Image (tube, rainbow, N blue to C red; front, side, top):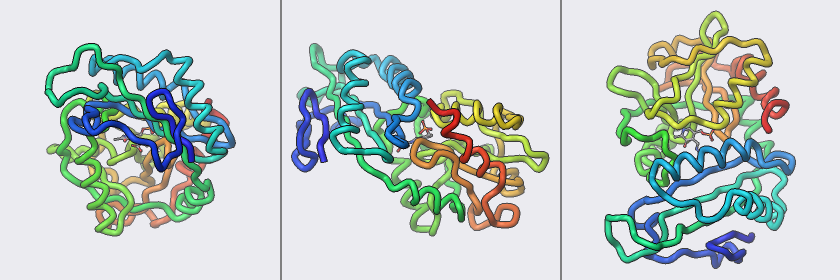
Length: 280
Ligand code: PDD
């Protein structure tokens, strides 16, 4: 494997950043994960637009021009011969002696990695669906910024694993579902309408989520962009999650409560199937 680190393509096993990188010390960095499908980097424009927004929200500079970053992403994908898989890119505020204040004249750090993922794994999982647990929201109030500060997400997803589930949904004090540890949350109502929470500062505006709005329009499915409670989700016709790594993935159990008949729903499976006709 080959990875890109601050201007160099290096063997993955030897790829390293300095111990005083602010990403390491302060989680002072942002990232993106893009899916690679049949050799295409899915929705690269959307991901780079969101990266731009994350950087601006944190007053962080682009490590290099957008076109140059696109070239690097394609190069890392090509050098690793990834036809189906993932690209990870991370920008931090750079390497500087540890100090909370922004360093002056410090170049941001850029890391780009890519790896293969067998698409059969996701397809198989979509055939059975996943289980989710709910956990109290304990993250900061700007999770619309895709920072590498993911400790609550790590703990929530590990709690899901320990409970025999695959994702954890953060729930606010009103019982409203916010999003998953690494995905957006959706339900399908009894009358076949898609429901997902508005993308305010309380969730990440998923690139997959945005593309699914287009997929739904193409399939003639109505979307209600509104909050929903755990109780409504448990009683829904279908539930599912979306992300670059899962596309649209059926949820068949929430906190041990079986959704509908316990099998993946037809709406989420039709969204999943039509996704690549719409994604760019
Ligand atoms: N996570 N919400 C959170 C908290 C996420 O971490 C992610 C993605 C999403 C979905 O966004 P998108 O559709 O753009 O992937 C929502 C990535 C996959 C990750 O951290 O691995």
